[in-house]
Image (cartoon, rainbow, N blue to C red; front, side):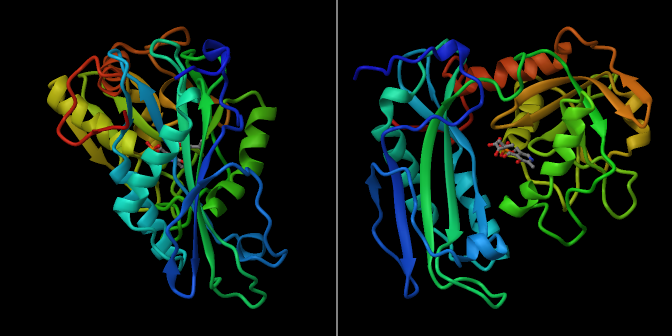
Length: 341
Ligand code: PLP
Ligand code: COI
């Protein structure tokens, strides 16, 4: 299999069209068999549910080339399950878990030439998504849907790779109590665009959103969960019903406890206590673990002892162990690695 001629080590997080995508359509209450197609464009009604009332949700996972040359993906069953939760909350039909995993495998196989080589620092990002494709004009769910998976080779999500980030405590809210913050609905990201553009204009890398009800607890950023390390080396992550249950964060808590022997806590984290932490990182599929150097709360700066030039030592260990598992250098817990080929 000849790889594409791509400058893998200099890729950013951007879309690049690859050869094949998986497409399945839902009509008259059933999913069709689905197929791999070449056309990257979609033609649907101007009145489709996705356009009028944002009836769409998505997932994100990656394929990796391991040290011994296999192509693998990481816990795709959890993406399938989370998409099921998203679909139920958005009144969309569920795409069955086994079929989801099978479609991920088929799509990556068909785009093998775009899976970045081991050691390049790049990965193949996999984007499953679903949208209401039939016309709706009264506010109601669509009757027809499309489930689709495309892939694109990517490098680091944040420019500058592992340079610690500066985060702004946002005045905007991302998710309401009892709203949709816990699912991966496109609408959550649409409403974060003004907040992120504003933060970027002011020179920040990302926003820290607070709980919308009291604005005193840490929630997450626009695309990643928070991890903190205490001065006595405990790993702490915010617990909230309105944040996305990150698969990376859930995996890192297992890595911290079982691989690094650290104490872990998932609990509400007050903004007030953030100044007492030793390290902070953002975790997600795209972010992997991106170190946070500074959080700015309306002019008040919290600079973590780990500083603005490198990852904190515990964040680094978490990063090395997680990426070691994903790239096949460290033995994975049962069921975490799905071999593609
Ligand atoms: N939080 C948000 C809002 C996200 O969009 C993502 C990305 O998927 C995450 C957290 C991280 O989740 P995961 O680790 O499953 O990619
Ligand atoms: C991911 O990490 O897969 C996401 O979907 C986050 C997004 C901001 C790119």
